[in-house]
Every structure is written in C-alpha cells, then in structure tokens.
Image (cartoon, rainbow, N blue to C red; front, side):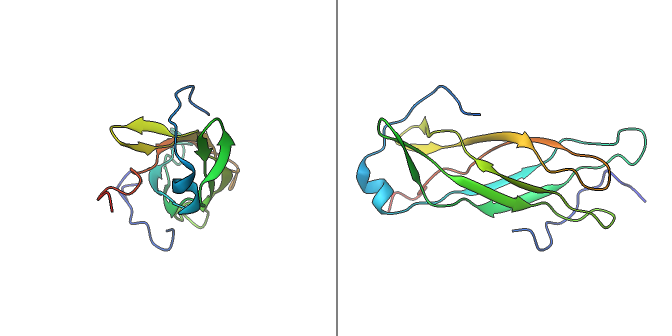
Length: 130
C-alpha cells in the first residue's frame, strides 16, 4: 500500500510582525476564515505519513491597535487508527490587497508515539466583497 498517497479529508472539516488595520465594523460582523492544510511528514523511514485538516476559524477577536486574531481548534484526518489535535490562535491579520488572511504554525498533539509540525494560512476573508 502506498503510504504517501493523498487521502480524503473524511470527517475532519506565530504571529507575523505585519499588521493590518481592520475597522470595528468587521469585528461586529464576527467574520471567520476557512483553513485547509497538511502536516509535515513524520516517522520517516518507519511509517512515513502526514495528515490533513480543514476547518472554519472562530470569530474575530480584537487584539489591539485595530487588529484581530482567530481561535483555531481541529482534529486531523485519521491514519492507521490515529489522529492528532491542535488548539491555538492565528497571527494578526496580514493584508492582501483590500482583504486579509492569517498565518498559523505549530505542532499537533502527540498520538501513536509521534507528532507533526504544520504551517498554514487562512483563505481570504469575504472573497466576493459582499
């Protein structure tokens, strides 16, 4: 069996120094972001594999000076009877044109005797501009 093959998501649905000033109206809207990603490979040479995750962040949390962050909690997909969990917070908003994204990096909780690091960025907020 090919252990490095792409798997479906199944039932899983650092702060950067850059800043982006959001007005209070965007916090009142309580916007969220989609976040998709994969962990880095673990158990190289033994049971080499990675995990995927997909979620919606929590609502915007004011972080001072006109910026905000989002809480993030997820479980990865399952590989050979184990999954990993993460609970943390995004970076402050990073400007992308007239919209913004957030960065997230960390390490999932250990399971099955190992852990994985990951890096991800949220999808852009309100891409249609409505």
